Length: 278
Length: 278
Image (cartoon, rainbow over all chains, first blue to last red; front, side, top):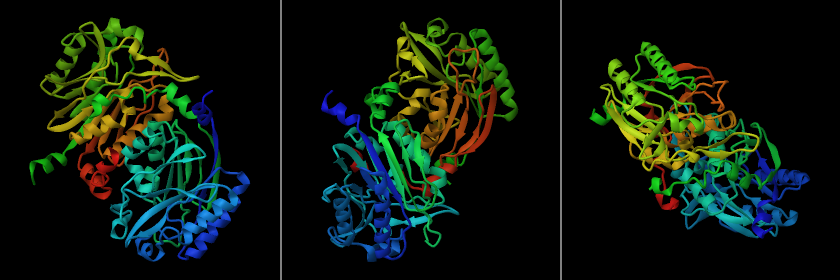
């Protein structure tokens, strides 16, 4: 059995922290800490936080909550991953760099070292009749590169929320070897019921990889009502486990050997016709 | 109002013939005729037949049922479209050409003229553990080009069944202007419950176009148990109407002005980042 097969057989324990976020950064970090510690009972390899886990999802808060790399929230994530020897996909936070603000995910390994960083590349600017209005680009700048990293020697990709609507990025991350894609997110009460599940399920199915979607819990006091429904989807496009809208932890062991299994049985990736797609 | 806007506002009446198919080609054509005539009560602009509507979906029948262009089934479709002044998306039939057999869809306009032809480009070769086995490539040859045509001045694309699993083709047809994609199909009892709806819904949503899926009805006497569930999906990824597994006609008027509406409200196509996808 070669090394690659050995890795592909690996089982991975994942905890998704579906947390409430309020207007006090300090509260949010304490809440994240409490829930991360609670998740340790499951002995997770990877803990995932939601989009904007330290800041209300509302453009008016992004500037004052923004931090440079290496500041409060960054240190919080580094310390907690080191202390508990867990990998952390740090949801996202407003990052400020050269006077620009990004929606940024930092990733830390079991030693507390930053091993990756992804700035949301597709900003959420929508205006749905009788539904959700939001314009990230009023305040945020989009990142310009995709992110694929190794966590415990498993290649994983990162997307943030609205990015999931662009099938080309998942395709690219899969081609570069991603076996799991983590998606810190905050869909809302318009797009959530309509689109949340089918987007993750179909991306997982098309690319025959796992998807982990980590949402904020729904806060009735927030201007933005997060959909919740954090979920884990397997490479058959099946939802393995899903939450409701409340503050909860979703913990699940996934088996990466499902990937070669589905790829052998429905070999879409072999049946690819690049000649047709140009 | 320019011509383009005028066309985009067009309402289109569609009838999907979800028909039973048996081992007698003559019966199948008579059945198709009966159902097409029945659908005329709705006054459809476009009538769609399912994949292999004149032949059981089983590779052992494809050679003996195969026809050259201009033979029995082709004439049947041409005559019926001319007689009733309807556009027909002719599902698919086994076509033989230079000793090769294709899974081919012919399209006829209201004058009975062939205005398009599509040979399935991705052959269905799957082997699912405790589920469906099928190998089209034992007998069939894949087509080498996509098809986009104008029906009553509306651009439409054609895919056949397994093709839907390849998001790149829908993307390409949409880029070339397709507003509706018709998919004669025959999913089965393994892949149907798992994947049928989410594939059509997500392709429609990603590309903000309509999808029309036309399945065979489920024949308990066939070796291949078709899933049925023919459906019409709008550019928001919502199913507008859906059948069960029985022989029935699905008729529905769709409103193409939903396309610019969703594209303005969730402008994913404007937010495209070609720079990232290379």
